[in-house]
Length: 261
Image (cartoon, rainbow, N blue to C red):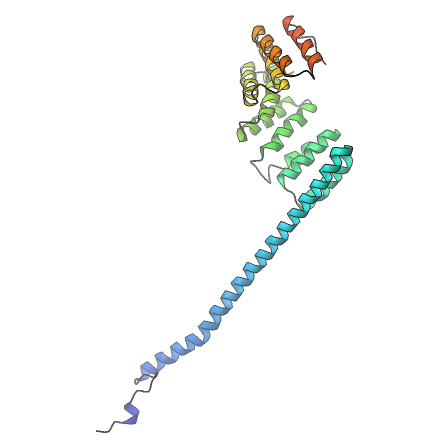
């Protein structure tokens, strides 16, 4: 029996009209889809490489900045040229405004005595890194140099909320709470709490923190504890012996008017 050649299905082609259309559609799909997938993959890889290159460039910039900082800090350690190192940090932070570098710049402005500029720079750190407590810690000192006790306490409270182990800030605001010129800002209980924490965290090895605690205890009316604390400070440090001996005499006399240098 012979077959009608027209009825015999050739390989890859459907014998029915609809089958032929489906096959053609599949072939067209493959013709256009495969290059499209390749193009998408190439574009994706190009984007990846672009980001990778930019990342490497940024990393290189950071390394360059760190090298500049290292050199600048070494020179500063030797000659204490604060004007020069401020200029270097201004140049570096203009290219790489990292929170830590800005905080260092603010600290250098404090060392130079340009407190307004220090505050301006340090206040600009928070928008870049709201959790960077060191900038707020430096702000406490800057505000105190301007006699802005309320601002100093606010900055200090923010700093210790971010870092409860910041002994330096705890010590500084403890002094303010005990000795503030504005009586409304005084809080001896809080001062005692913070001063005690600062001493505890440093294992009673920081003489200035011990001195603050003794002052707070004296202001709070506990002269016996204050005397014991200042004696502990004298045992710890001979460098400030003259000052501490003066403080001991002052505490023994309960003399809040006398000052020791």
